Length: 184
Image 1 (cartoon, rainbow, N blue to C red):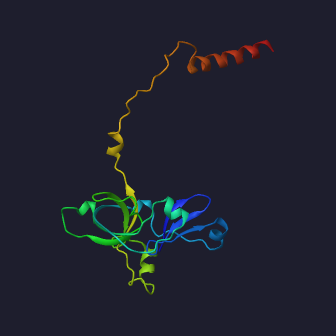
Image 2: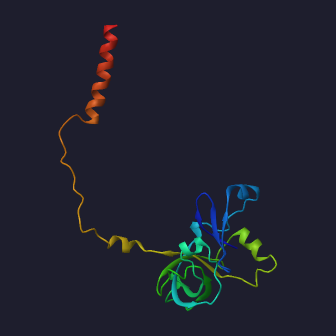
Image 3: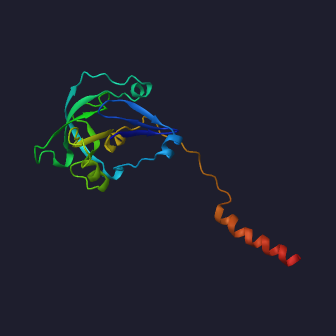
């Protein structure tokens, strides 16, 4: 199971267990296309409670460095259950370069997903060995942070001038066409 983190001329994927990044070109993809297990509509909000750094050899590819991928083990709790129950998950994540405590992240809760492809994947041999309960996809930046970031300058507007409007021009256009027909 891999995560698609970028689509451009290539499909950029990262394996969250080994931290290796790959690029799939269009010729390779169309020879053997693959289907996504879960889409954006299945993302769930989680809160990061704890972060532990791992001593692993990460892929030193340019893509991994540019995207700030760093493998860490994080403890997350579902935001909707936060304070209601004590269910937390320890999972590996590729977002160690940008995550902090109490950050909100978006991820797939594989235990609560109802997906036929995922059920078939669960029954394959070897799935129980590395069963991720949650797969973190990206860090979530709440909208209220954007609202509080006000500009210190105001956008100036030009004064509106009186003149022909679009409605006036539309009314005059049929009259001119009618006059030409009367002459001919």
